[in-house]
Image (cartoon, rainbow, N blue to C red):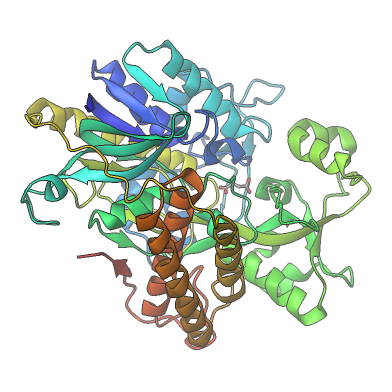
Length: 532
Ligand code: SIN
């Protein structure tokens, strides 16, 4: 027996929570499905902040120009303008919801600087901006009588008209009808019916061996959308953050770009401040350029990392602006006022994803996508730092407005949705294979589909991923599903989409750099993958 909501939101980061609040405030019933606790999201890890034009000496045209420049010819300029013009309004909204942006002693808001920005325009809450936003939104969610939060529920599959009646997948009358979700507390798959579903599942960093992303970033929304026949684009553009803390294990703690914004510089093992050899903007060049420069320095010297030198500032200044980073490093014996920080690039953000229009609508009726899972056209081939939290808030607002209009016309389906059928009720006795496969997936992507690519490496990766895909599908159909199996299935699918898009792009642009096609094509075009 299925439970009905006006809207189901899958994911509980800034995009999902903002969207849910707006729909609930309009009197609609909303369920938030989240695979862990509601506070576990990529948003929590955003240190730098949220880019918006709020100062007299800045203007939206400059923010647009910086975004287009970072995006390397692939941004949709109309989309860029529409999203960025709402920056100040989005900041006001977050402040109304209780986010206390850091202020200077004279009462003005403190504005940080990051790579690719020609102005100081990053609003922040010290170096824990994401966490502060998440807390404010969660407070609003817990106060709302119209929102049910289903924690420890793993959304497995979108239920569509084409799956339960005779509509053709991808045809105009196909639409989303709900979600199957595994309740990890009871091990039962539950059926949720809804007039609309928002995917707000965040990114994919976990498909790589080294990532700044938390364990939840496994591309679940992209995988679900793809299986439902929805168009996905530009998956080759994984952004590698230039400065993750180097450690002997696979953990990659983020050292915010804002640290370079305050004057820290990168040095190689010979002590040289090398960025001047790569770009006139030096350490504050856009991320694709800085990450490639570090990769090249490491390859030339054979060193396992480069250094980030923030020793120009006193301990008080650094601790005041970056308390989280300062404490994390200090706990490892790295004292920023006297020690350099060992840093390496790590997978950080996906610029492609589920294609949406400016209303957060996807190609499937009733299905919306917002935040990192979505590809609106704002980021192009390389996201400008701190544009993503802004995109999430603006697109949640636009999507919620569109959904309210949709709900005012939508007629709920009158029939009961079919229950989930488990292929087989046996538990697998070979779970060790899943962890081996996960390991192989992460290494394959890191070794063959990272910062510098070649066609041969991509083809090798594709063969390996196809083998993993065959194996995981066998598991999926033969055993009782659980979270690790479902998650790995999604990650393998997403890895395949990244490789397919990377093979389609016969040029080097933004975050996609291949030795076989080092130049840019004259015409900038999106890559696309879709099941139908
Ligand atoms: C950072 O603080 O460097 C990350 C912010 C972002 O990814 O936009």
